[in-house]
Length: 338
Image (cartoon, rainbow, N blue to C red):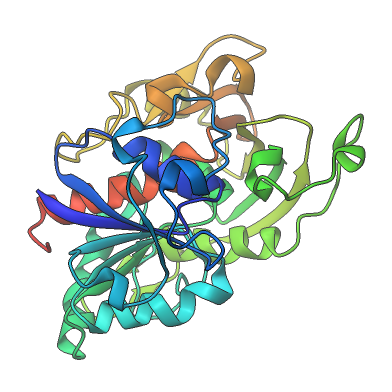
């Protein structure tokens, strides 16, 4: 078993990490870190558990530590749910000290020597770990992208073989993506907020890196343009999006690609039977009905129309955050980087 820790264990994504790591066959959770106001408390006392899942009693008596390199000296891998500004220093300290980092933070996503990975899309980018070690790091940093970028790139995996030069996406993002304290109730009830700071830029940049090619020394961005428009809507969990891709006159082939596509990844604990599930119903996917498909790790696709236009949806804190980092770690483990 690999000894692991969770950085930022009391927040929305941190809680999801803790929930998903309970009983994991590869990883033994032994360290939970949070802010100084929680340090020294038992996890059950420090956390205000708010997930739609039972509290993981196995970890209730773990003592929460400050987020310092000293608190992590006995772990091999950490999952980071820290805000970007707090992640920068501690994640780099870990990587240089021989600790692997699977990060949900945005801090290092666009660094040229750090892989930004969605395993079903660009598993080969994990080869950048070798470049990090060649530069003197004893550990590594591997990031997963923004929650909406994950849904988008997963949905593109079955159709990446088709030629296109232009992609447009409009998102309808759940309130849990802003964290437990992210949006005042009076702002989101009976409302749509047509702006999420930094989100559009992340989708536009991250998609090109993920869909790009790794030549063994650097990543070359994908040869198409991305334009994103991001909206916050009054849904608890599940990011939906409308996607336009300029694939012309091949709708039957595109539909067949969605229906038959299977990942070539090995069987991993967090990998769903279907990473992308095509839905024939004219009014699907819907967050309330479809977000927990594949235990929250499946991206649902539907409403395919000429253009090519389609809808995609997935669970933002499972597939789009904690589950994505854990799946990255499972693949890293499978490839003997741990």
